[in-house]
Structure formats: C-alpha cells, structure tokens
Image 1 (cartoon, one colour):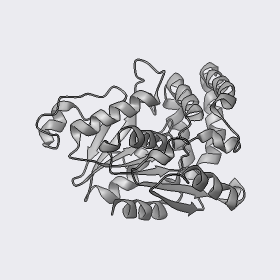
Image 2: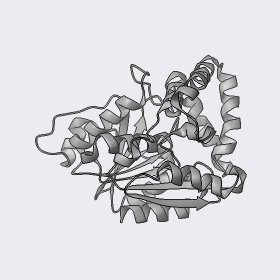
Image 3: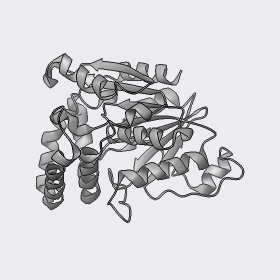
Length: 291
C-alpha cells in the first residue's frame, strides 16, 4: 500500500489552490486534518473508528485523475493527535466538516464515509443538507446497536456502552493490543490487511477511541432517516460467516427503509472493510455513485 504524501490543508494552502470562495474566512479544523489529492469535483472521504485515511489508498489511485479528493483524518485516530476535548467526538466533527466544506470546496461535494465515517456523513446530510450533494454510507447503520436486536434503544444499551468505554480506557497497552488482534478477525477478511487495521487502533488515542465507540453505540438516527432528502447510497457487506442473508439484508435495508432517496448495494464475500476485502466491487460502486 503506497503512502500518501502529506498535504495537510490549512486556510493559507487551500486559498492558494484557488478553490475556496473569494470571501471565505480562514478556517483551521481542530477535529481532523485533510490531505487533498487530484483535480475535479470535490469528494470528502471519512474513515471509520480508529482508522487511517490510508484505508482509501485504492480510491485515491482510481479517482485522483478525475476528482479532487479530501482525505479526512479524524483527530485521535491512527496516530493523529487527539483533540483538546474528547467528549463528545462525533458532534463537533460533523460541525467542523460542514464549516470545512463551506470554506474549502467549490460547491456541494459528494461524501463517502466508512463505519463511524458513514454515520458522520448521515448526520451531516441531515443537519446540513445544503453542504452535500450525496452520501455513500459504507457498512454503517443509523443505529449501530440495532445489531443487538430490533427492540434495542439508546436507554437500553447505554449502560453497556458506558461499561465498554470505561473498560477500554482502563486496559493496559498489551491487553488493548491483544483485544484488537481478536476483534480485527471479524472486521477484515483479507488476512494480510488485518495487522494494518489493528495497528491503527493501537496507535489511536485510547480515550478518543473509546468515547467514539460509545457515541456510535448510543447515537440513534432511525427517527431522522425519513427527513434526509440527500440521496444516500448504502453499501454493505455480506459473508456466510455473518449469518443468514435475510438477517443482514433486513438490518441494512430495514434501517434505511424510510430514507426517501436510498440506493442499496450489497457486496458479497466481504467483512466490514469492503474497500479492502472486495476492492473491485467496491470501486465499481464508488464509480457508479460518483457518475
């Protein structure tokens, strides 16, 4: 996997590229950094919980000749310094993304988000529909904890989410690393990439990581999906190891069934990291989404 040359966007740098409106006020995000690659229509790419923006390397290779890619790195993940405050994590991330888009893109960009990045994109589309043209949500639900059952509620899962958050923060480094080695077996089917994903989590700020997990588990957007007018593409993984097909289909299609402009793409033979496990199918879906 090639390493992207670092180009952290600052107000001065972006204005020098001539892509921000002439009257835009300088804005330096504190909740993420951005690498910008390519030229063309703007696309924002947001990685998932604990992940590096390098997860999009294949998309960069395929798209930078035709699109201007804004590769977000969430503060506190994969070695990026944590923000001054780690509680909350998602809310300020959404608001700063809206401000970044206003300041440094030429219009309404497309947004692609994986996992927590997909939830972030969904919230962004609901709260700031004028900032985005369409959103691809990669293997993410409007309420993550619906995976525990259709009767799951925020109130019901909050104590468990809080306990998990506090346990993760309390783990020593070796125990946390061992936990990630086990967890990645269910997230990445491609064995050669598992260590990379585990290393990203281990390099993350532990409090930022745990708090973000807690917020993903306790954020319920199911009641908001019907009000999202932005076109959504929901791409989700299926593998026999996950259980019956109907269960996975129902989880994702049911979760977004009230969205007025939703398109569903299922990718078979993949775990959570679809862009790694099935790169050709994923890139085909991205190309169709951006067409």
